[in-house]
Image (cartoon, rainbow, N blue to C red; front, side):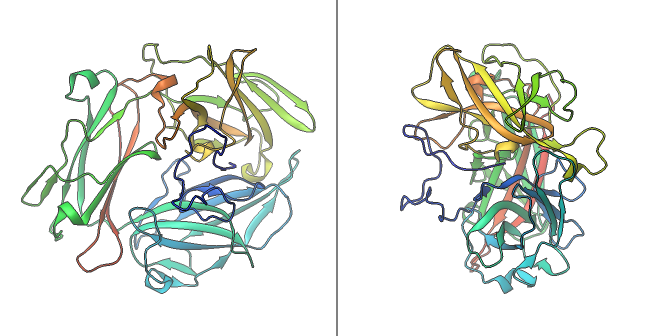
Length: 425
């Protein structure tokens, strides 16, 4: 997906750098970001599990698979490297030989041209770690893909490497606070040291709780509520509560010959496939309705293809959300993994006063997609899905708990534990 941040006047803009240079193209970001407009459909997942988080265990046989398309359709000399980061996603002060074994940069040698598609593209893929690049320590990493001879990345992606030294016992429940019981979800958990010595856990640990692989609304740096023997307790009433929000909306564009349930029309205009979704309505005042989703992710797929990565075509997909009047205190975005779980220019919706609603258009590869409409208030970096989608404690959400530790005298953060759980309601 084209992940360019929003710069419209009066629109909320997340994570602006202290020097004001964030939206200069050369400004380097330690986050998921696409710098070149020809790059599309970037995916990073545990090899063999396309719907997994970008998380692997240190010194295991687990690998991350990275795939992406270049719409220029030619063959380019792409390279990749990784940068070790702290718990706050800034570069750690380590030199590469302290966290990598092998070559600092590697060429991407596996690529294939698209076949029988209107949109020409070249599909690239590689795995991390590899025989030529091994990861020596745990923690946060930033994958950087770039053209040989250039310092500007083509794109960057975050991933995590865990060295499981502690146990995490977690459960999701309805909140204890009365006013939150119908709309929110409480994540209580304990960290069990399992004989591993953690010195001064109130200062040396950095704990992150994420919902559906979103960083914008992650709860960060919780402190233990109490310490009993080898167990750190994080059972709070308010500090560890998320909006339940709602199940993701979805659409299926695996076929160009017939319309699936959410597709209003499929046409071919201006040398491009055009897909129009049925109009959406706000769900903020509707009762909860259980639906199966994939928690905001997407799957690339097309029917009757022998090779999915190179035979799926691209198309313009048009979204429309009915809304009585434009909002003056923020903006609405199409949001999900297809927009990098970020508030992007591509996902920013504009208001049509004649049609009475918000609309947006995304250029997407064939497949099955989840999405939401998320509100971002002016001068805010935290999105609000409940604003349009509603808020229910019953919603099926995925949570990931990450436990970082900086040993006394150390200059980097290790990732001692990671746990993924799903709400049981």
